[in-house]
Length: 160
Image (tube, rainbow, N blue to C red; front, side, top):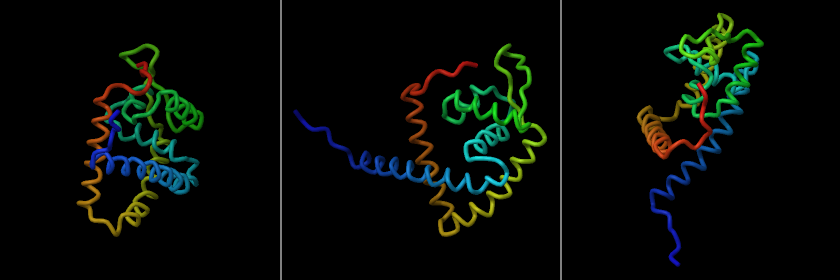
């Protein structure tokens, strides 16, 4: 029986995936330290950002889909954020049970404070790198993500 071999691109992509896992761990730890004084974690900041950057009010299911994560995890974080008055639920005219999630004034202020902390941090982190190289890395990751999305749903269905 012939042994399956990696192609050169397969080897390089495997290294990229492994480095992405390592990078993600360090990124989450750094994010936790960066926004901890605001009462946030990286996960909570990510959800606030998904809400704040969305062009329209969204349901938890759509937020999770846009973030590429499970709805249940986003729901748990949104519930925590609602208890702290960072987000609120509004009726959804298109669905009786799936409320829309929006930032409160306090939530928007907290998200903006996190952004002000992020700017000098990311500028320092990227100071030795060419913007063109960062853009290339972004395009490669986007291409791989789109291919994964094209392979079909790997996560449970989200209910709207």
